[in-house]
Length: 238
Image (cartoon, rainbow, N blue to C red):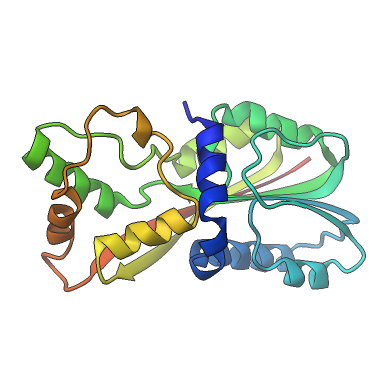
């Protein structure tokens, strides 16, 4: 479904701006560190898939571990090494075959190893999605897929169980965002490398008034744009 070449291109294009727009990655990394701190895991080998802004904190947590990092989107997992801990951050929402992805991660975990994944899911950006659809229906009588489909927590639990992880755990961390305008919100998403890779397929071109009208819909109750990100956390052991 997703063009991984498009995703990689988007992330490479906006990589220079990521450090100033990486708040979702920071929240994700903080959640990860908090969960790992509560675990009794003492890994000697760690694999990090995705941009992890708290890499120094991770090194302090596991000073004796070898940490391999792949900060860009990595749909094909490097399988030449096995690991005690695998972290996937901001990757899972773009995987075309999530079951196979999880099975691959399971296969390269050492016995009793831990997998930790976190990604935008559930009803993330539901307010933005609804406003864009409403505006587009007014302007063009049709609606493009401008927000990618999101994986629910319940589906995530089923997927991690299908991959044979033991002690599976899935929960959702909701984040409320405020921006001065829809343009500021979209700018943040773009600079995080989170442009919609499906938007190029649509034949419904965005009218110039689309985002201004959607901004108007979003601000009917407040003077700012409020939207929600639901981060789905999943954990499992081998």
